[in-house]
Length: 112
Length: 110
Image (cartoon, rainbow over all chains, first blue to last red):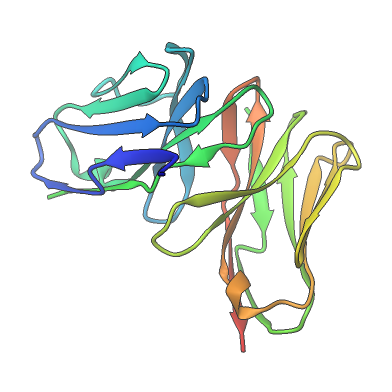
């Protein structure tokens, strides 16, 4: 059973389009995250939800909007995609304040 | 703002050798994590270090934490090819904000 899953795995789209990435965890964790990994492999936190409440919202353009319908799901919607949005987006989850983070397989977004 | 630096950025080493990766961070934190990422893959959690002097070991990898020096080390003993990957440390700012280091790309040569 996959602990943290993301769909789609690959996403190729044109500039200006709107797209969504979905994430689900079956670990019973209470906290979920979105990260962006750029072409230089640098990882940056974007958002974090704890018990469906947004607790971390980094300086991300407001074209990015997360949504957590329940504790097991965290989706990321991106409006008006730009070339600079091309990256790998990872979802992760954890339980409690000191637990390990479990990462999803990543979604490679390419904006043409 | 919390900054996390790793060195070296790239490390090429012979099988059987020992080496250490360093992770420095700029402000106080009560948790430090180490992760491994294989090329094109996701991140795998290796260690969490929660207190000054904490040491964790798994196979050929040993991680330690010195909170006074704001320094963690990941020591590799008798490297094997399977350890080739990128290793990240991450420090927590506040409760849930994980700040990742730049990563160390390790290549173990046969």
